[in-house]
Image 1 (tube, rainbow, N blue to C red):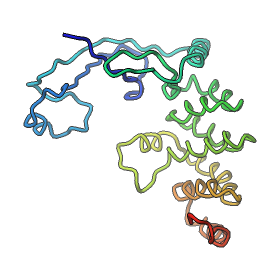
Image 2 (image 1 turned 30 degrees about the vertical axis):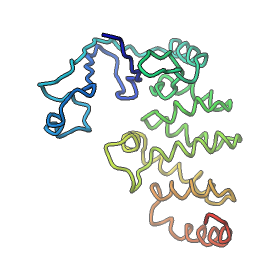
Image 3 (image 1 turned 90 degrees about the vertical axis):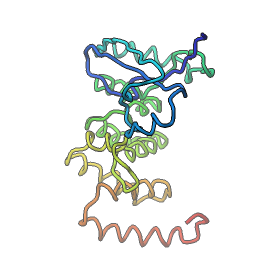
Image 4 (image 1 turned 120 degrees about the horizontal axis):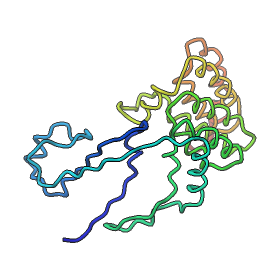
Length: 241
């Protein structure tokens, strides 16, 4: 007969279009018997398991509205002033905090891009979560920034939206990859990739190698061999390599 709270950011689970939604929430609270859980075959699904259930299903009706440009700026200004964590205590309601990955809608891209260009990594945090080609183009542009920290972070975020052999769809990576690239962007990405591979920064070379593995073609092999020859000699005595 006591209140127990566990906070989560609903918009990390779904990217909503404007409209009215019925949201149903369920947690077995540790009450379900093992046999009932075994009968629920798709345990990784977000679907609510079928009845009978020991705990109740909670339902809320929520209206989502997309902000206009002015409202989006107000949202960003409010979030910039928020604390960076929820100060969450187990079982207690947390406080609102700044989670810039939730600002993953197109209306926020111009604002987040300007924030990133000023050297604020919070802007990159938002752009990295955006699943549309214009966000990929912004990351490619920010990789050319004079600020090395911003350029490196933009490159790392670009890695989160390329396919690789360790990814197991459905995943956030596959979601971003499927929605964030065009043929023109793949071609445009090769310029900063070759710049990374031609540099002397080990982390940058590794970043470029991951990117070309996903975005390159067989026509890149001759130039890539030259890069490999240089890198193998340069780092042959490196303690990690």
